[in-house]
Image (cartoon, rainbow, N blue to C red; front, side, top):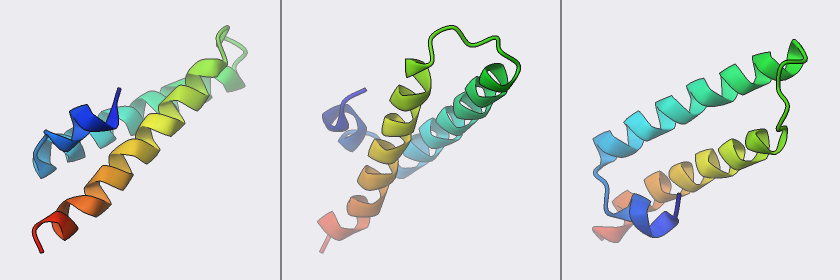
Length: 65
């Protein structure tokens, strides 16, 4: 997921995206804890995507000024 894709989304869409990413992160953490996660790099990708969404969400209101 690219930041440019996120910038085109509305605040509601960003919130939905964030919620789905947080659920995915929780699922991956549970898989890792139960030794079912074979590709551990997925955790890092999801964390970076969460950070991207939160960054875009934080900058959205500032663009209107």
